[in-house]
Length: 408
Image (tube, rainbow, N blue to C red):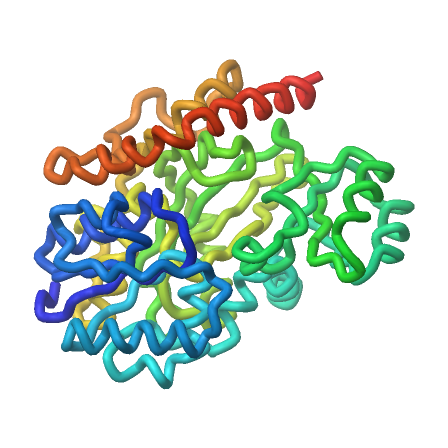
């Protein structure tokens, strides 16, 4: 590693309990790379890491004018005082960097990509269109522009379907739906749609039955030519919220077919940088269908590392500092667990058969929060979870009731 080039964790919006940022701090910090982070306040888990050289307390919402955000990043760059690798942890940051590359290029290093591509990938509609354009399977989808469009769709759709927000950025504003929403029939769809306004910002998507599907994860880093210098595959075992949320537990599983599909798609669209992709294997037709393409590091990226000790964050730093990225096999059978969300997820998934392809016993386990050489982020996370504990328990009860109804 080039220890003369620091890195900066860039986040936009308020989500202090982000284990991915902590993982990136540890990944580079353990190798002696000076690493800085933007934090919501001084008491976030990331701010407590022993490997963090400096923090910049800068609370944002994601609704700010982009020019103001660029100015803020430039001020941070001047304070660091030397060229710095940017590591975005959310779509807002990835899109901002791509669309204002010329202004940020002086103090920062980051993968160069077509300015509009990250925004298009972060959009459910944009990603679907790219999949159609390049022959990549994805769930059948509709993008209604009015209530009349939804009425027409309800009259011919095969239910159940799922509704999602069309643009990722709506998470920071006023989303039409709360995450992925399963809709059982036309009457339920029409009732929900009355609250979506005259121009519904939703995607209505084919429902892939859980009992006939497998959830796969791919993490990759591609260089300026679109060639994948690091690429990993794994299976998601549990998520929170259940079946449609953040990874709570996952395993590294070799999947050459999926790796090849991903590498080919990344190269064809001309993407450069770190990416986190969610695929679902539909056993009914035997095809992998692309659900999400996040143009930034995934929160669970530390699940993946090759025999040379390279993960996607290290691959990005090596590439952007002119170093070769060492190759090696991924550590198959390794497990990743997010302690604070896997505990409630286990209760919901209790009795569900183990995901296919996962070993009976993990080859090793990477915890998202606790590390013997850096314990403070774990305890800071626990302290911040005490307040929302009652809300999480209520959410767990609602989720278990919904899961029981679905099984019936």
